[in-house]
Length: 427
Image (cartoon, rainbow, N blue to C red):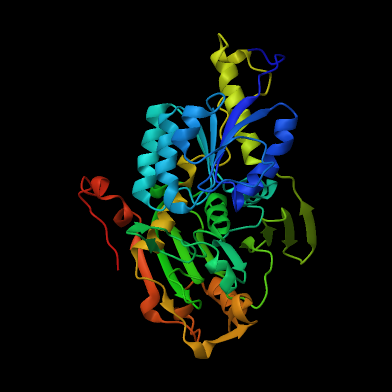
């Protein structure tokens, strides 16, 4: 296939039409109209509303058997507990995957899925959409170039609010476990997971081996199992800045989350949901940049198109001048291993401890009510400044028993840890 040849529309199927699945349907519409893709079917436990534009199937098995053409790409936008099983089923059927975040609820599932993708010879893109923003590459460039001077840490700040209705929207919302399976919901692993993942990527931490130690302090104000007021710190195995995050769903109002790197020559702050970057030099002069964004499904399609072209070329140097023959994905499953390691740390420690009612004000009524931890945004900033959990800086709502420290090696799945003579430590 030459660069000038048009390719037939690539068949795609979507599992999960509600929640973020509805976002995927909207984003796929222009790709279908342009002939880039063809939606051959959707899967959902309940029949979608009319006009979805593709036949509905109650299960992936039914779609694979009854769809008009086998899907080459499968988008999985379902509850976290279903990701691993659906992904393995899709890979076994020969599909490439777009897997919503968080990809899987455990490090063991992550390794199993990597193995399954390798054996199937298929590609897995993970839906960390913030990686598609141009600010991610710009921040990595600023850090690597030394333009800001020596940088101690890559900081993530996310002050959001969530009401009772948010945690009542589905059976798994706000749960750590359900029906004997890990759910792994929580502010750091679901709504503000993008902040954690992007901070790790900017710091150059993408694999479990890049991590030495993880410290967490997980708290909750809602009547749920999962964390909603969280500090975490990831210390690297090698040189470079550590990553830390102060993330809550207990703020008085919702603001844009950000990632910041700060050195003696200045600082850079990225609002990753808007792709807005602010640079401040040592003299205090501010520069604003608004960067573009690349859609991760388009990134996956381009990746597959280039792989198809390579399959029809006699020599790799027949590619267009300047074209990247490796076609790396922006958010490959392999590159999310560090995030899943952090997720494992949040789930392997003690359950989040409740914050005392004397430290909380409830705003609103009924299902619209949401908790506000007193002065939470101020304490989030103090924790990031100190590089330490809330309990170690004197926050009045803090609980020293909620602090958990572990090494990355201690989090390795049992079958891998058994072959490690050094073991690991966790306390």
